[in-house]
Length: 257
Length: 257
Image (cartoon, rainbow over all chains, first blue to last red; front, top):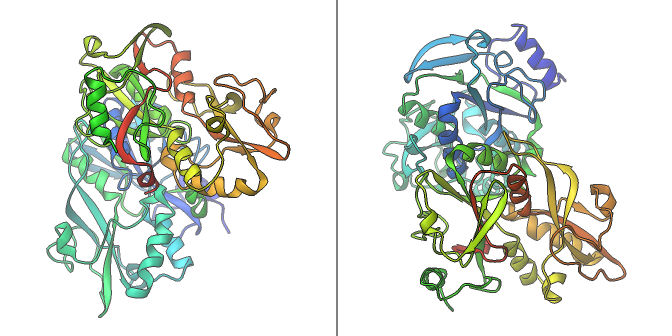
């Protein structure tokens, strides 16, 4: 099996520009947000106050393109297959390499991703509907307020996976053991209780089948910090393109400790 | 039993200026570090990179004396029985009220404390020697480097509790379930393995009895961020005086979730 460092080398050389789902199974993938230093304190504070929706795996040194912990030696400007650049909250381009845009005041935030707990759920024989159906996970904006921090505020975005009654407890225990990648569900059952009007019309991602007797289970979602960030219309930001993540050297199982 | 908010009111009015050990049993107590905003990013980043020795429970809004999460309504400049002020790394005074020193650029960090996990250990019938002997916990500077962040760097400080063989596993499980208050031990056994030359001569606190057959068990200690902070000689900082903590509204048992 290819090592994550080998995969990142291929990405760096332009040999993989597509999504990363299924790459290096068993290893954590991470969301990316790159911000100027002047916004970094508020963003780090937002993450500290909202760890379930914004679980930070690593923060780079200011101005450094290189990671030390979750993917030692990774060049954050080249080792992700596809990036998006935003100016004043508007996407101005997609790139496979953002090294030409690098600045000495940029800070990279690597954020835990539900791919990790989905891998552990499937290992534990818990079904993950959107993967079975080949779709993106359904995501919803809730009425649950995040704790604001400086310029950042907004409501929590959740992802939903429908489960039969006899898999719900196991899903809580498996994901609850992984607080670095969103942790336990934030809600089980009635969508209206958290402000979701129509479970079949997600705000992001795709709708999935909910079979008779199944219960919707909702987890805090990493789209939360991205939505909160973009609502503040930062002058400059770089993120990964959806589904095009950093493949790290950290095994999912080690996110439990 | 007195509620934490009632105790804080007494402190605010000057009616309690002593240590807080044993106050409001079952409720978490917190360490305090107050820094100017210009150092707050580096300190928050240090905590993010070293969560075991620097588990942050709450960070105030810049300039605000009031807490929202762990002790809603608490006045952080008055509700702790005793404070220390440091200038350029030197303690310049002890005070029971620091409101006269307040500035619009100050940020308060409330940091988890081993009192919480000691309470849970004793609930689980695990012995805590320094409490039995009426001493301060022994603490040691190790050779384990913290991940540096900006101006902050240094080695981890650990606290030690000697345990008989048949209580070690339970102590790992009990404290491992409380990552917000230092979590599981960082080392079990041979002190020299983590750079401790003489177990009977701690760098901070008191020596305690280690009985035949007992094993020293070492936990990350909240003195770490204080030691790292003072080594950087900040122009201005306020901390709690040792043993004089903020009594919060958070039950220890709720620090598990």
